Amino acid sequence: MKKRTIAVMLTAAMAAASLAGCGGSNTGATQAAASTAAASEGATEAEKAEAPEEKAEEPAAAEAPADGELIKVGIINNDPNESGYRTANDADLKAMFTKEKGYDASFAYSLKNDEQITAAQKFIQDEVDYLLLSAADTSGWDSVLKDAQDAGIGVILFDRTIDASEDLYLASIVSDMAKEGETAVNWLASQELDQYNIIHIQGVMGSAAQQGRTGALDEKVAAEDSWTLVTQQTAEWNSEKAQQIVQSVIDSGTSFNVIYAENDDMAKGAVAALDKANISHGVGKDVIIMGFDCNKWALQELLDQNWNYDGQCNPFQAKYIDEVIKKVENGEALAEKVIIMDEKGFDATTITEDDVNNYGI
Image (cartoon, rainbow, N blue to C red):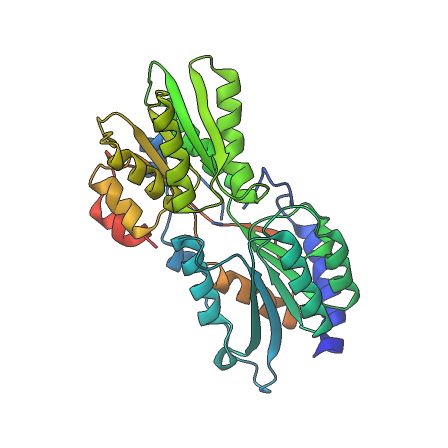
């Protein structure tokens, strides 16, 4: 399979580069669900954005190869226990990349870039046909991806972008993380508070999700005198660390009225600290709670009006990856280099039970 794949992939990569409709590895530009129509007028508009259900959008998985030869893939992902989003993402990949569907898959997990790069080097040595990558950090990938290209291995990015030449990968299946941040910040601005005193809890520093969700807030704080960051710290997507950060602010006696957490688990940890201190939160309460990823339990918190906002991040990328691989295997040109999936934002005052059931992960 290796020798057959080399020429096919290089041809497809060149075709994809010429046909790409949107640009590639800018961390502020993209990272999980086809063109985002999220609102800039607040969450009400975000709720009105037309976002067809992901299952209707996803291409159907192709059948296993008729000749029975398995496609060998090495999949590098973040820790599946990092969050509900990551658990759903990992389960989706494992359900797709099976022998029954024509794949021989190996998995490697880490939240550290250097460990992921080591795993990639091992997969290259193992002569996989495709390297599927959700990078822990956006930088440092050029050398190993060049090694993969030289070995005739097709690289497909999923969930997160990297700072590397588009020539080094076949496709990038991502969310628009910058847009996720913009939608959330625009919603927060629409609340028209007299003063915004914000606890900002960041994800793993350097990840595309962190950069996109942080960037919009940083810009707004820099532009508005009434917007202040009480603290800005990373909890590395971890609930307990987020709780410690918020508890530290509470203990300091510093006033705050917004918690902007870059994933649901960190928002949950933040709320635990508030509950311990008997500080009210949610709709019409003392502190606005914002999260990302749309775990079902988090959307339920919105429905119960204990939280205020949650930004969607689509974890179901396996069928998109399968579609890319099948096209390359068939010698077809890829219509686009970057595949941006559709996402939206949810407001506690407008979310419905159907939203919880349809969009919760």
